[in-house]
Image (tube, rainbow over all chains, first blue to last red):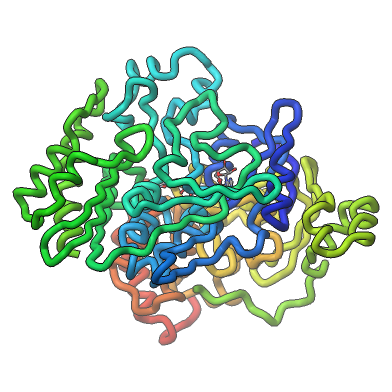
Amino acid sequence: MQSFEWVDAESVEQAVTLLGESKDGRPVVAKAGGMDLLDLMKGGVLSPHRVVNLKGIKGLDGVRFDARQGLELGALVTLSRISREPEVRNRFVALSEAAEHAATPQVRNAATIGGNLLQRPRCWYFRNEHFHQAGGDDLARVRDGQNQYHAIFDNQRTAMVHASTPATALLAYGASVELVGPGGKTRTVPVSELLLPPDMKRPRDTVLAPNELLTRVRIPAPAAGTRAAYHKQGERESYDWPLCDVAVVLQLDGRVVRQAAIAMGWVAPTPRRATEAEKLLVGRPVDEELARQVAKAAVAGATPLSKNAYKVSILETVVRRTVLAAAKA
Amino acid sequence: MAPSDDDSDPKPLLPKLSRRAFFTGAGASALGATLVQTAAEAASTAAPAVHGPGPSTLTLTLNGRPVTVQADPGTTLAELLRNQLGMTGTKIGCDRGACSACTVWLDGEVAASCMTLAFDARGRKVTTIEGLAKGDELHPVQRAFVEHDAMQCGFCTPGMVMSCAALVERNPKCTLDDVKQAVSGHLCRCGTYPNVFKATLAAARSNGKGKGRS
Ligand SMILES: Cc1cc2nc3c(=O)[nH]c(=O)nc-3n(C[C@H](O)[C@H](O)[C@H](O)COP(=O)(O)OP(=O)(O)OC[C@H]3O[C@@H](n4cnc5c(N)ncnc54)[C@H](O)[C@@H]3O)c2cc1C
């Protein structure tokens, strides 16, 4: 890892000012928990000239719930805190489960929700210094190569998938993020619009500008009768990256579904809503047969690559089980 | 949370660096600027202190003792511990946070020291495997690892012990599932997990009673 300059930002405003600069083609980057940054720097994929430490900024590590406003998480709140926080566990169980099942206990203690959403893809071609710098057709390399963990939907332009698993739950909850730029210019962006299809040739896979900071994540207050479930499917029980993960948020009226959101991660370049499948749920009570139909609809139109057709049937099963789990939650 | 380090420590070699001390360290220009501005203005416009890319001073508490060292900002805590502070009980396996051999406690919570920059440990309490025993008295989890043969080649052991000890300190009534969760980030090539589970549960049961030398 090449060394760099280190600056402790004391305020959002100051951090934003510092982030604007770059030197000799080496960027200035923000650092929260540093889990993704270190990985990229050790891999030779990122070599910042300066790191702006955000951890000392006050007021970005709060968790607040309000019955009208909903949940607000400061960007520096760690995944382990999200997994433990009673307000999150009680009201947004798909998010606390997603946080609890991401990474290892050690990583969760450092990883922040802001950094988590902004992390880069885990594609092994992306993370490899040689392939990262090789240029040429990134997609062809994946198509002809080791694509067992890549996208099974929307994979015509890139087959890389976004790495954040909490993003799957946040998408299902209709969450948004607050971004702050120079002069305190603030905008709110839904998670569904924050994430862009990963691209090796770009420095980030989100709409965040180089001199913007992600300051907060917000989830609207859940309507009465809201039930949710989350499942991350790995190759083993112990910690691992997912093959796919699914978050389901249902609003029930008795047993009848009034509204449904099904979000699926690690199967498309960005977490994907199963819109057609959601429509099947609305107005009906959930049972095994309906869950089966919903799961089938959720995987319709998949275009698996040479080595990842197995992910289609795994996803179908995980959707079915998670829909049933949410209805029973 | 696992217990914090002994508070009856000798005084730090350097006082904990304050925000102001960092500003002063930035040199006369930053200091001058802060003097003629209000605090609020200063916070947003003063050029903050820059460390690195070469070695810069940092202070942390290591196993209850304050230490001040020079390290460049690209140094990980694991490298600092092993290469500069002689704490080679902390192992580096994957160097990517994926095997947890490098586990230490940061303010009593488990951390992957290979993925932690040394600068992120400034002003914090770092506990390594060397700091777990009280003199000759092993931590109950260390004793239980010996008694239950919870190691083979031993490479993952220091990290494994740090995670299991943190669990036992936090939750003396821990269950098998809790132990599995606590070591879920640890890779043991020898496959000693069953004995790690047994040892940790035994340590939890005996914690408080039967502490002794081993
Ligand atoms: C072994 C292992 C397993 C993992 N498994 C999972 C998993 O299952 N699911 C999952 O989702 N993740 C997983 N991760 C990834 C991990 O969760 C992320 O690396 C971590 O959440 C990133 O957060 P951070 O705070 O450390 O970010 P950093 O590394 O500090 O930052 C990440 C990026 O975001 C930028 N940044 C950070 N905060 C801000 C901000 N507030 N404003 C603007 N820019 C910012 C940084 O410049 C950088 O580009 C795993 C990681 C490891 C090492």
